[in-house]
Amino acid sequence: MQNNLIDFNNLHIITYPDPLLARKAEPVTQITPEIVNLAERMVDIMVGASGIGLAAPQVGVLLRMFVFSVSGKRDNAEVLINPQLSKLHGQSEIEEGCLSIPGVRSKVRRAATCSVKALDLDGNEFVMDAVDMTATVFQHETDHLDGTLFIDRLNTVSRLACRRALKQLEREYNEQN
Image 1 (cartoon, rainbow, N blue to C red):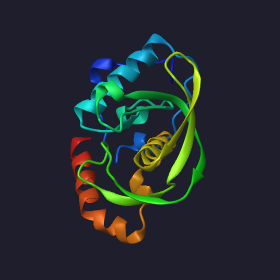
Image 2 (spheres, rainbow, N blue to C red):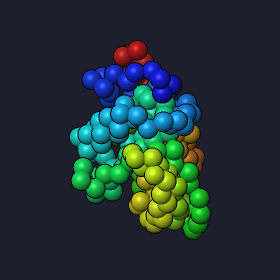
Image 3 (cartoon, rainbow, N blue to C red):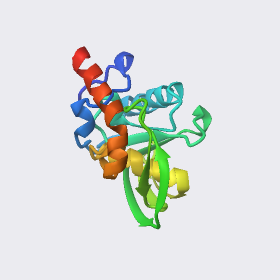
Image 4 (cartoon, rainbow, N blue to C red):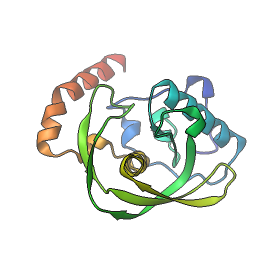
């Protein structure tokens, strides 16, 4: 996957139910200028869409990396390459949305705290501890790398509440493809 050239001019947020969103991403094996450009472009797309996190699979690139900025601002954006979650503790229920599932929001139960080990754009390994919203973002974006969407984590009642909006997204997707 990494050897394929990325068409940076055509990067855009892909939406549910695109099958790419259900595929598992591959590890980044080398941090090349292309990976750095991808990260920069992902930050642009995330900020432009008023998001706080964006995983590479959401722009059609099946690599294990995501960008985030809890403030939603470019200058606070960080890149995590090959993230690995650990130390998931407690329980939190925060309303989530997703740039790939426009118009759908629901509370999702996740760990209240976690740690993530990842590489930065220079290839340096680092660990970040996160609580509350940042912990939720780390878990949400890591789920994308594993082909899991936040709607896959909803209880039956919440899933039923989102059903109409999801069906509409499915209809729109099918009309376009």
